[in-house]
Structure formats: structure tokens, C-alpha cells
Image 1 (cartoon, rainbow, N blue to C red):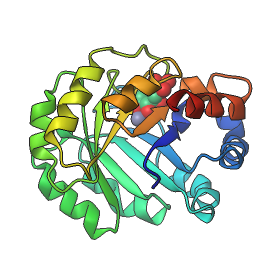
Image 2: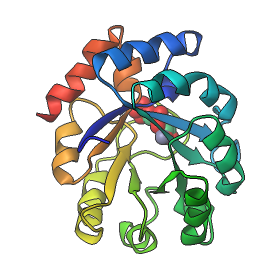
Image 3: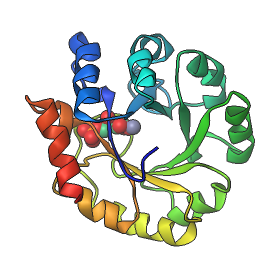
Image 4: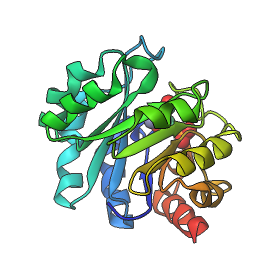
Length: 219
Ligand code: DX5
Ligand code: ZN
């Protein structure tokens, strides 16, 4: 992983052209793709799962990229083996969905997966940081999880700053929800280096241009 990544969130893609849109973004330099799995229980919508992942992961992995799987599901551990087999690189599950994050992280590592801990806007960053020892990344949600296209919650900036203070420097901070050219730099300066972008990329006609706009806004 590079020190900073704009991660296209495939949930916001045009599913009739999913492969083509991924190829376009790979050519534009994107390497880490964000893949949202929702179960209709932890979050209201059912989104996508290992069957779709298996189709889209090969070209990303061939470019030495990664598919970062955001599991908005209860009992996330039930899906780890299938996600790994389908080409997933890492799993980020929710603090609110599990009783013992450390024990669930061990199960993810056993499958050879990277591991992240996500937390909702109602959960304090202190609680999330305290549970995230040994995780590769902590995901600060800047929306209520479930859908693409929601407005960014500005209080996420303060939560990211708190996390950056509490987490060891090697733990990446990811931010997801309403990320766009207008806030990406502030988020990066606050301590987030994995910036998930759905609508601000796929909601635009020209994907390479939308991706480049985000990269340039970081500089
Ligand atoms: C929704 C997902 C996000 C979503 C982000 O809960 O976790 O990854 O696709 O979409 P935007 O960037 O449009 O908020
Ligand atoms: Zn997500």
C-alpha cells in the first residue's frame, strides 16, 4: 500500500459496467478498491458479496492492487474464508457488530487477510482505538453506514484527530462517506491516509478526471 490512497468505492459504480469502470480507474492509477458488503441486518441494504468479488478481483490483483472489503454485517467471521478465496485482500468489520474485536481479528489473520476495525459515528474514537490494537487500519465512518451518496458529517474530522493521537503511527486511518475534493485534504491533514470515495468518483461522467481531481486535491 502507498502512504496515501484514494480508494474508489465500488458500491457507487454502474454495475452494468463494473469491470470496465475498474479497468479505467486502474489505468488512471487507482490500486486499492473499496468493496462494501451489507447484509440487510447490520445495515438495511443487501449490497454485494463474494460472487461479485470473485469476478472483479483478478485485474486488480494483477496490477498488484488490493480489494479492501468493508463488512457492514453481523457475524463477519462467517465470510472470511469465502472473501479470501474470492480475492479479497483485507476485511474491515464493525466494532458495533462483534463482541470481541481481537478474537475476530485473529480469525481474519488466520485466513491471510489484512484486518481493519470500523466504527460508526455514535461510537467514541476512544473506544474504537482501545479495541484496535494490532489492527492494520481503523475506519472512521463519516456517514451512517449503508448507502453511498450521503452528506459528509463534519464531526468526523475531530474523531480522526483523536484517533491519530491515540493510535500507533503504523496503524492506518481510513475515512468513508461523503469524501470528495472539497474535504479530502483536510481529512488527510487530520490523519486519515486511506480515503474512500464513491459518489465523488462514480457520480461523474469522466472517471479518470474525477479520480485525478481527488489526487490533486491532496497535494
Ligand atoms: C456506505 C459505504 C461507502 C459508500 C461511500 O456505507 O460504506 O463505502 O460507498 O459512498 P460515498 O463516497 O458516496 O459516500
Ligand atoms: Zn464502505
